Length: 108
Figure 1 (cartoon, rainbow, N blue to C red):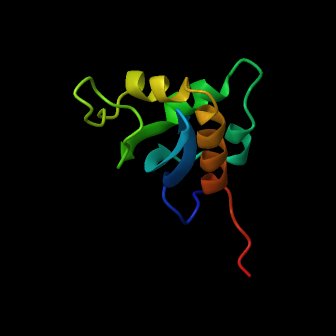
Figure 2 (figure 1 turned 60 degrees about the horizontal axis):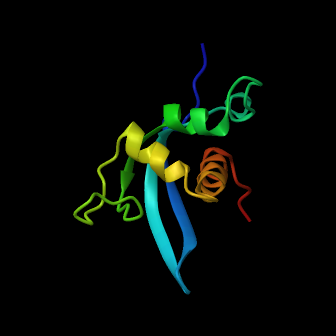
């Protein structure tokens, strides 16, 4: 049996902007997720990107995009995370950040 010399958890920096009226608001936070292999990042035909993220992401830090009714940041949970992913463009940004974090990078 083999294992790799790094942990099974990845810390994913996520940054994006969204329009709020005529103003662009920037959001930056961190997702905590299970590391996927290259094969796992190539989704099976019956699996969606959203399903993969919902089963892999376990927490978030400094998230201020999804709020509770009292304007406090929502705690992490599957329902809150899925709500985040439903917002236009967010799923793509999170998926690309996740894939980039799981993959090796060439050191110059």
